[in-house]
Length: 190
View 1 (tube, one colour):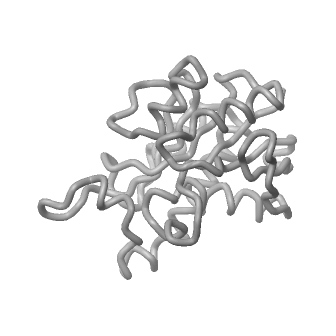
View 2 (cartoon, rainbow, N blue to C red):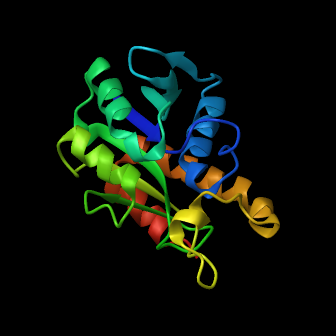
């Protein structure tokens, strides 16, 4: 069984360091761990690689589309590699979790996250696994839409490598020992 790990974000250098792109950062880390790099697949409109993680071949990728239309490329990549929607792992930023925290779940709503909304629509089910990377809430009266498109603060940037590592570890834990064991490990971290 092949698994597919998708990191959500926006294309282009102007978005590369923003909170909304933390999912892509995690997939880039998984590519590095698998001694690979992502290459363009015009057929699926993604940047993708097949790497060995947790002892198995895993397809990893990032849509080359904007966040709000991530579903098409995600679905295309899953179909191209014959991956069932329930074997898709989506890594994404999460406003409702404090910065620095990683949570894992299967299914659920989109919580206003338009990338997840589009992935759910394209896959035809919400029952894929989500690795939710906490970015925290916007300060003061800042709109969430503006907050997610801003770069991480200087304080957050110091912690960001650890957060990306944790989220990549969470993906590997899901692949190695399954969803429930990974949840136990990551949801009980002190």
